[in-house]
Amino acid sequence: MSYFVQIDSILNKLFTLREYIDDTEDYINIQIDNHRNQLIQLELVLNAGIMVTSISATVVGIFGMNIPYAWNTDPSAFAWVVALGTLVPFLLFVALVWYARYHKILA
Image (cartoon, rainbow, N blue to C red; front, side):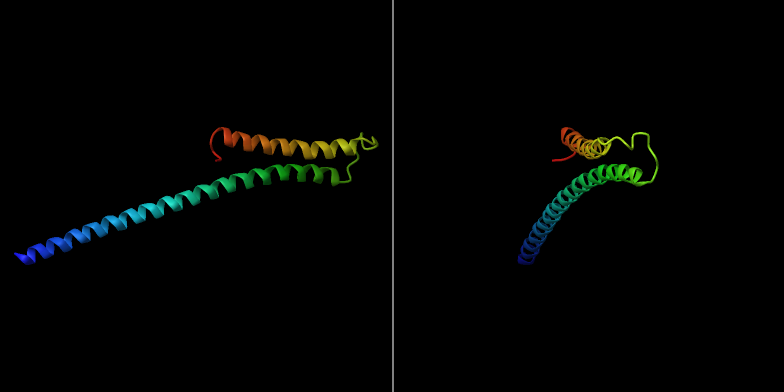
């Protein structure tokens, strides 16, 4: 009879150990999911930044070509192009981040 008691005790310890291992695996998976979500959020912000930067680069590329424009002689045209080429992408980036936070895509 004592063998059955010892075997039952060992079996209970093994079941407890299996539950502990399963709980630890669940905890690790939760931590991994949390880090994955943080990386996805960072990727979203970086992609939005790259997109608005490419808009500015496109404007610079177009005006860097030697194409004659009718308003090339206007002295205030350069200031307007620089101001709008900086302000519009910045406002677009702010709008994208606001949209992502409003819809709880970003924390």
